[in-house]
Image (cartoon, rainbow, N blue to C red; front, side, top):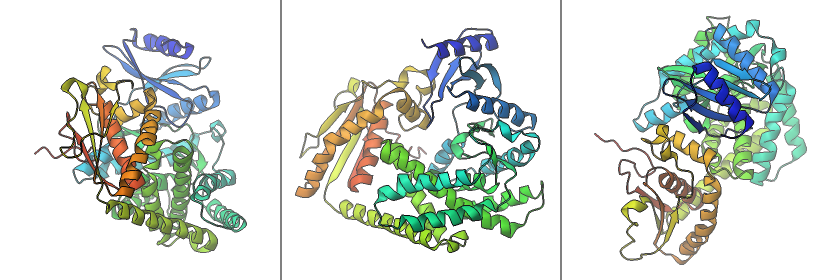
Amino acid sequence: MNTSYEQSLREQFKDWSGKSVQTCVALPLSGSNRKYFRLANDSHSAIGVYNPNPPENQAFIKLSHQLIRHGIQAPQVYREDMSKHTYLQEDLGTESLFDRVIKERREGGFPLDLYKKSLSQLLLFQVEASKSWDFNDCYPQRSFDRRGIMGDLQYFHYYFFRPAEIPYDESRLLEDFEAFADYLLSAPATYLMFRDFQARNIMLMKEEPYFIDFQGARQGPLQYDLASILFQAKAQISNETREELLDFYIKELSKHQQVNTQAFKAFYYGFVLLRTLQVLGAYGYRGLFERKSHFLESIPYALANLNWLLKQAGPHQQLPYLLECLQTLTSQAERWKAAEKAAADSPLTVEVSSFSFKKGWPESHPEHGGGFVFDCRALHNPGRYAPYKALTGNDESVQQFLLAESRVEEFLEDIYRSVDPAVEKYLERGFDHLSVSFGCTGGQHRSVYCAIQFSEHLRKKYGVKVHLSHREQPQLGERGERRDER
């Protein structure tokens, strides 16, 4: 650690814990300029934050103190140095509610009780904390007003809908955007709105949910946050579970205030539509424009949510042209699925594998041989750090480390450019086999991650049959999922 902000965090950690830092690991980058580090010694651990945006830092720190005063589970801020744009906060561990969703899904379950706990905490955040909160301390704006709603809609417009290249009348679309904003602005909006309330921003410590990344909170409606978590695309919550959680939330809300259930649900589905369009815009910007593949992975799930929503009762009956455009968009998604199926009917199978160079090169196909072998050892190795030693490239914290600490996305993009032309030629000529292998030192972290990402790239781009294997990690299944070891 050589920078002034890193030195500031070391000094804060020593002042707080009484001992110097022994290990410091950079955590994955978010979609902002904030940088996170896990600092630890033999008795203490904390998260260090550097953010060159002073108003945002002040908003987070003040709101953290406010939430804790109201009994809301949020990280304590131990130390701060605003001159260096740094602060030290409580380490809430490495498991998020989203991690738990993925884990339980593999076992056929869903963490319903944890979602209910999170919704109960959300109501404390929205209703109770707002009673004594000065909304002038919010950043970047005091309230979720027309500008915020139109910003979400235009985000979808310019970063997802327009790149989809669907012919449309922009003037008519904007008219419906304005009408939609008018409707949403008629919802009660005197509460503290989290703004990005989703399972990745809820950490689990001793089976209790703790909120993080609430620095964008502002005054707004209740329904936006509820829509955000229940319709988080990649969480893939079933419709039945969503309805159960919606009813639970309304029942809990009635303990704080009177509720008109019919009116609440009408506005709720309006905000579900808004949030769904906003996240599609985010996936488009991060995936289509910034070329971050992990955002592209969420697009099919968001489109599935949109397709379901368009079939439900809601305010979009008053938005005929917007509804028409969205139906065209979702029908196009169905055509993409049909194209993938056609490709899947081809004879080509791509064998993708991970392996350890220490244990020798992978065996080639007995009939065809050859293929591609890529060396991942130039990427920063998560296995050098204690938190990741027992994990694999299939675990989210390892994936986040690679995205933050190595140039893995550029590495994979170069591989796509190398292998994609071969796949296309093999499909054209009716070939039936291609092998692509990824090696690293132990065959545990980097090679596993790259093999999984490359397999998903092939499935999504070409719809071909992919056989994925991890030679040194036999406990991982076909898509990187952990097999039932019973």
